[in-house]
View 1 (cartoon, protein in one colour):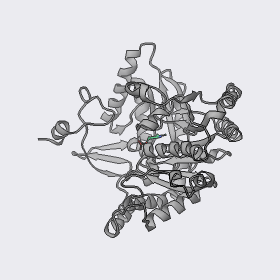
View 2 (cartoon, rainbow, N blue to C red):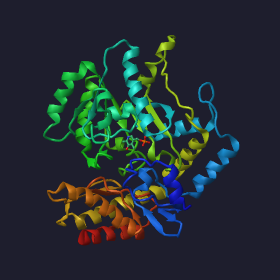
View 3 (cartoon, protein in one colour):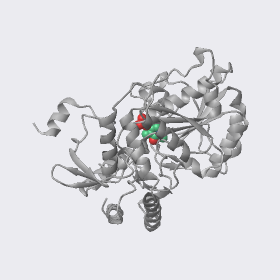
View 4 (cartoon, rainbow, N blue to C red):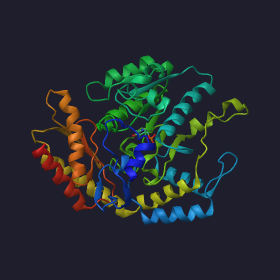
Length: 421
Ligand SMILES: *Cc1c(COP(=O)(O)O)cnc(C)c1O
């Protein structure tokens, strides 16, 4: 049997309608921005393998550090025990985060980082005997696929089967110049019951690479602070350079109480989630009363091998060459967006840092909308590029090591798609 046949007989793939999906493409190796199939064909990974990869595939430096750690200590229970990689990673992450972040809680992925953040906020109030139980979130948000994370995400086709079981959340529009005052009074009206406000700062990724201005988010956050509403910045997607700065919150002056990280954290090597918080959050759990403990943990919490991958990725991330690469991608994206923005098939282009999104014209026919997504996806796959449109929204989200030649090739193929499709 071929690998594809074996796969189809035993594997159930994520976000995939197994009845109608094309068979999966076997990948055997990766290097830089390239993923190679069995025949040696390179696919340029223009979506960073579901937004996680930042330094390229099979990076030799990360591989070496992970191998060293594997030979030293592969895992230890993280309650009652600790280890150098977990402590060093926490120290180094806090050093580059907004200054109010004081403690690091480890978990397994972006969804669990969000679950932990929500629990921290709800129990923060509970521990103080204050009735604040409602959560405020943004329309079209995406915070993950576990139940709590799903509940604070926008209701959509993805959540439809579970909607009746998701706890109630107050959803507000993305802040802009014309609605900011209304949003602020909405918050003021709800505040006595609002535990927290969770948001993806500047860019709502899965919602369609929807972007909004830092200054309005800042104003909304300042208002939340004034009203005593805790703030969770979900930087699972935007963290580690995607927005042009190290973190999306670096574009803001108000500091969130809690932050969530995952995707780029290990450079895309292994799964890990981080929830960081301000001292005041942590302090609300300190007590002689054992019931005030944060009762949360996962079997692989702070896995040493994963920590070593994150540490190695951090070494690469803070290097000057990475900063230059990010700036280079930002500039190249700007130039390309300017070139195509007036094309009749482009409704609008949006860019925040290294994230460039292009909304394609679909006409009024919504069935065309579906076929357009698949047409685009297959067109680029045939050309050896992985671009995975969200409906009619095509986006480029490359690892920072992508070369100018590879970017030119992607831009060129998008321009041909504009003519041919
Ligand atoms: C992807 C994502 C998550 C969920 O992370 P997983 O590791 O896939 O569970 C949460 N929040 C945001 C903003 C994301 O983009």
